[in-house]
Image (cartoon, rainbow, N blue to C red; front, top):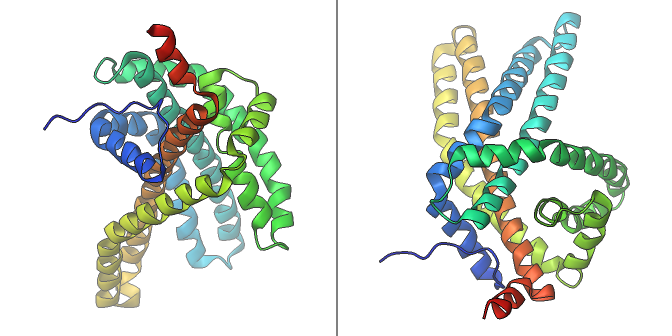
Length: 279
C-alpha cells in the first residue's frame, strides 16, 4: 500500500503528531540523514575528537600538564558541539522548509544546503541569545527544583520555526512563542518528554552491546594491558553516544516543528484559510 506524503500544515492530536514525526523520518530517511551528516557531521567529528582527548587526559588529571590539556580540549569540544547543535537545528528547519516549498522528491541536498547557509548566522545568533537567557534562569532553577528552566525551555521551543518560517525578529518570535504555548504548555511538554524517553531507550539499547564488549575486553586483558584498549573503547563509546544524542535531538526537534504547525492551525487556521481562498 502506498503511503501518502506527510503534510506539516495540519491540526493534529497527541498521537497524530508522533505518527507524522516518525512517518516523515521513515519517508525521508536517506536524504534527511545524509543532510544531517554532511552539514552537522564535521562539527560533531571535531567536537568528538576534542572531547575524546579530554577523556584521555582524565586518566592523569592530577598532573598539571594534563589539567590544562583537559580544560583546553574540553573547551574546544564544547565550542564545536555548540556549532554542531546550531547546524543541526538549521538543517532540520531548512529540510522541512524546502520540503514544504517543493514537495517530497522534488529537491536535492544542494537545495537544503542553500537554505542552511542562508540562515546559519540567524540560528547561531538565536542560540547565543537563548544561552544568555538560559544561564541565569538555570542558576535560579537550582534552588527551585529546576522548574523555571523547564518552563522557559518549553515556552521558547518555537522561536526557531517562527523565525524560520515567518521571518520574524528574535523579540517578536519570542513573544509569539509564548502565545503559541499558552494553554498548551503541558501538551507540548508531554510531547517532548515522551519522544525523548522513547528515543533515549532506543539509543541506550543500541549502545549497550558496545559498552559490554569494551568492558569485557578491558577486564580480560587486565588493567595494564587493557588500558590502551579501554581508552580506545571509551573514545568510541563517547563518540557514538554524542552521535546518538544529536540524532535524538533532530527527531525531537522534528516533533517540535510538527507541533508548531499544529498550534498555528489550531490558533490561526492559516492552512484552512489558504484552502478556502483556493476554492
